[in-house]
Length: 238
Image (cartoon, rainbow, N blue to C red; front, side):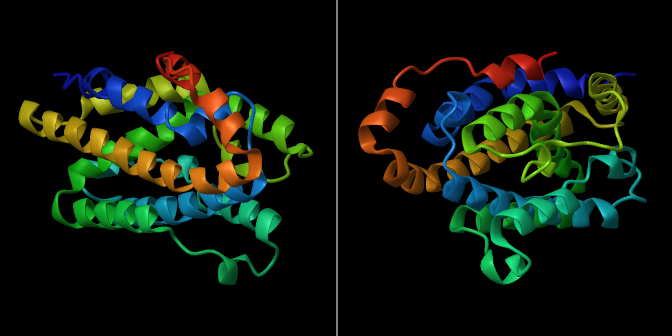
């Protein structure tokens, strides 16, 4: 019996997805304006988020439900470490720390992992499906906007252990649908996914100050004036 969890998550998070893509930082990013200092802070914040998620999933790999969602080929922690070494240098561990919004995000991941593990599915879905869907778009923008060479500072977007990303997403959604979760639990997971999107939005909004300082209020206002359905959201539905 299918839980239709993949469809519930997709439909139930559409509004939050659009809101996240319409934050000033992401709106500028999608329009080709990426400022290196704020971007490397985003990479640092994501490192702490993925470290928390992946440690939790490693601990839950034998869990009757969460074990089915354990796909180490999705892990981003190592790729983010490579990117941090590029942006901050060999001593990056001494240079980076989680922002206030990131600390709140990580605390929520740790909380659900301990108290209600199935809700962790919401955080996995929000980040990994987004990475697989919009990642290549964002990588191309980042390379062009920051003048990066191929493979420099963009390891986060590369999934060398996944041969066909579209095929993998289909399999991942099929796995979500096969999970033995009740209607009530499914609704709770969707609610948690919307919360995860808001944690991401808070992280993005923290970075806007650095971005505005770098590009100026006028350009920031121009780039963020036209709010619309995000381009990576359209890809995420495929």
